[in-house]
Structures are given as C-alpha cells and as structure tokens.
Length: 192
Image 1: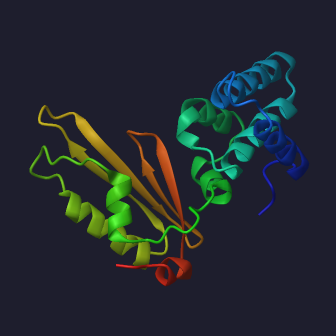
Image 2: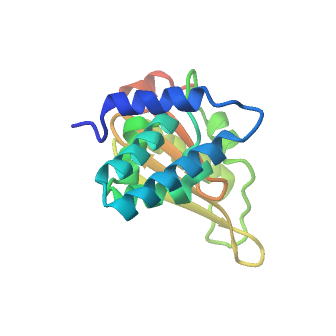
C-alpha cells in the first residue's frame, strides 16, 4: 500500500511537534491552528499540497503516540477533504500500546464506568468477555457496545475495530483510542 503522504514531510512534522515548548501554549492548540491555517490557505489558493501537509501533521501526531480523539473533529474534516478513511489511517499509523497484554482486567480498566440503564444493555462483565473473545479469536470486523443512563441517554459507547495487524478499542464518549497488536501477536500476549 502506497504512503498517503511523503515520509520526509511526516518526519518534518514530527520534529516540529516534538520541539514545541510544552509550557507556554498547549501542543494541541498549536497543531490545531497549524492544520486550520493549512486547510484555509489550501481552500483559498486551490493548492492540494496544503491538505496533504495537514494530513502529514495528523500522521505525525499519531506516530508520536498522541490521542486522535483530542482533535477528532478537525482531523475528521481533514480526512474527509483528503478522501482518506479514518479506519485505514488509524490502523496504519496508530501505535500499539507498548507492553500492553490483552487481558480481561486491562479491557475492564480501559472501559471504566459502565451502567446498565436498560434491560437490553450488556453488563460490564458481558462487554469485557465479548471484547476479550473477539480480540483473541476474530480476524476482522467492528462491534459497538452501548450503555445508557437511567434517563435513557447514552452513558458509554465503546467501539472495537479488528484487523489482522491491529486491534483498536475506541471509547467514543471519552474520545480515546487504545491500540493493540492483532492476529497471532494477540494470542501470544494474552494473559487471563
């Protein structure tokens, strides 16, 4: 599969993000403003390279282990304008957690609070068991898990995305992504 953006541009963006001063302005604000400026200039000038450079910044962000969810709305807009699939981007450039084993306790910790506000909602134990089973035995697919508050509003939403190379657990309410190695590596690292 061909690179979405030139590797030199991605490495340059990584260098720029890594060298930002951490105390004055938050990195998220600087990266967001940089991407907005690129997209605005690209629209005004008609230059496609601006969108590709914005995409390179997103890839650099992911390769540095930053959370996609922190700037999700902006990133989604850039992906749409560059006609790039969010799932493809996350699978190619999101980093697996170092040293994370796929265990039921780890999954439970990542999910956090879970309420069963409706009779059809799965319990936390049922959700953890299903995710664990799918992580170890399914080769590809997508599954969404919901729980509701007593008033009927959505309290929690977890999305599990599986491929042969990578597993992504996406907490949609908290806008967090957790990456794990997929396929044979998932079984090799499974605890209990």
